[in-house]
Image (cartoon, rainbow, N blue to C red; front, side, top):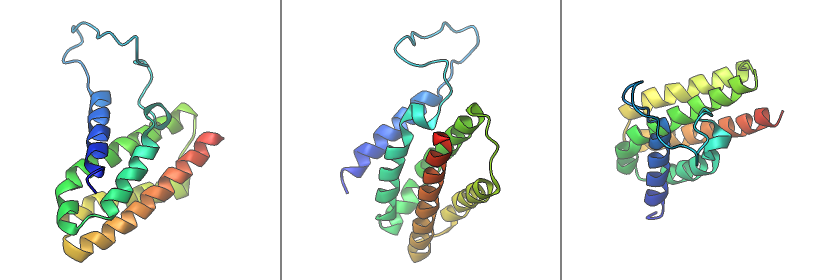
Amino acid sequence: MRMMYPVLMVAMVTLAACDSKPDSADAPAADTSHMMAAAPMTMAGMGMLPGMRAHLDSVAAMPPTQMAAMMPAHEGLVTRMMDAMGTDMRGKGMQPSPAWTALSDSVRQDLAEMPKLSGKGLTTSLQAHAARMQRMMVMHEGMMRM
């Protein structure tokens, strides 16, 4: 259980760093020669899936009080992951299928509802949410192979 915290923190710091923007258009450009600065954040480019799978496994095993405390961080990770998946799809000129749309709508609904829950209700909801997220990641991987 203690190993989950460093993994989660590294994932959050990495995602936050990738989402940062200069304060103004006049700001000097940072030296990004070591990075793919022009590339949008993508699932493949971020290597996000293994970290998200580990995060979901850890979260699903947490006691409800811990789940509730980490919910804002989880929401941020999931939102960034879904944004990156959308970027990947647009990069390949893909339109979301009805199945993809239904699944992503369910995940968004989870994120809206889970902060209102506690105890066993939160545990049950988060486990179902983790299963939906796993399906979404598998679906995304399949689409990206095309």
